[in-house]
Image (tube, rainbow, N blue to C red; front, side, top):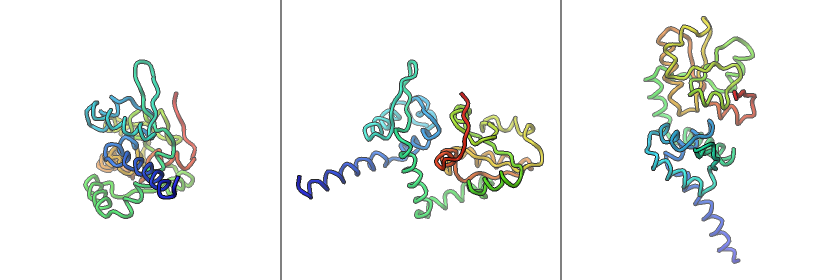
Length: 221
């Protein structure tokens, strides 16, 4: 094999991998599957696209070995093929926030609208946990909480939060987290809690970011 042919083959294969990533729905699917495995029906509902459309995107991702499948009963469940798939998405997300001004402006505008423009990092949360009592609130769907969550976090899915506010420990700051920086559950929860006079702030990152740092987490079987 000639040198030029070798390079063309290698770089073409890498280009096909990046092409499989280059769609907003596929990036959302990676963000979703980082929370746990999903059927195509669940993915379609969460991403708000048709089942046929979701299936097409998943086939592209499967062809690039970004996702794998596992049969559970009558359903086929998709999962990320490798933890490094999330790491690549995480790096792309962080690069986009740092280098693309429009992403930063969009985040700022949305969070100001939801009264959740303040946030804290995982490192800052670790300091709060060690120094003082805080309430950690996981507002993702219950299925995602069971698949993995920050230790001692309370599970209150966003659609149930309004009815559960009175059950939260009184007088403590509430740190809310969800799937990641682009997940709106945490912003909506902070807006709701602060509107009720509760000190609340969102975690900038999500549970997959916590897990990717090899920090302890809990699951419920």
